[in-house]
Image (cartoon, rainbow, N blue to C red; front, side):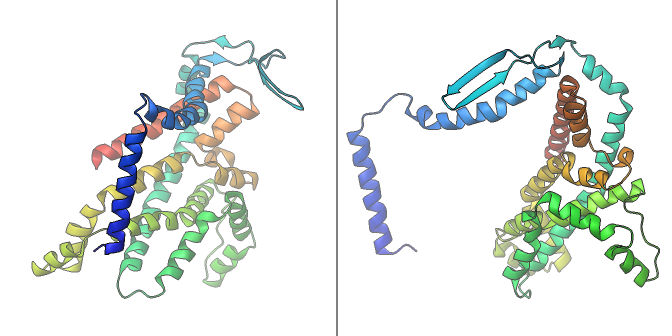
Length: 325
């Protein structure tokens, strides 16, 4: 219940707001003026790059011209945008090439396999940890939340390198396997285990992030729903199935969609694993292949087409999840 002081402050703010509206005549288009910074930033950093990527996917890039198409002279500094000369229109040639590109097909397979290993483990762990932290018997909840969320703040390259050190031959992982009588795992020389290593690295990093989101969703569920279920004689499993899961449906959908987007954009972890000696054929993801095509081979047109294909795959999977939910 609000105090008298709060009510008085609210009334004062409302009164001053009404006075301000009386003093300032309405100006047509004012909302658009206040929203214009958003539209400018959205256009410059999202809309234009997206449409330019689609545009480039129909061309073959043949070099950069020395003739600038835009020059901004700031005195000491000069911003020059060079012309991308000799863009040759090839229509759907890049998209036809994708249909027979075995490297692209293998990259899709690798990405899907890593995603299929990562997603169930990560979401199950996040849900389990969130349920434990939301339970009344758990102590030191704030400390556990901080520790579990800490990997999200870790630099991707730094934690990837640490993982590589741990699984290198003769490292801590080998010692642990030998201690329990098992043979060491060839994490960096076997394609199967290298892909699983990338999945485990992602699980370690993103489980805490998803746990926090699910935990926030759990705390919005009304206690009255659980009390009603108890009155009806529901067991703990039945309360979880018929109360918790339905109430968490929009939260879990958000977790699945964001995890799908992140899973198919995976780049840093495969790069570190490949540079550490893992077989590239079995660990190269779609994002890594786009990097190779666009920035190592300088095939910007085909790289743009691959990017469009990746966006279409992610959008299709996201729409499928919305449909299923």
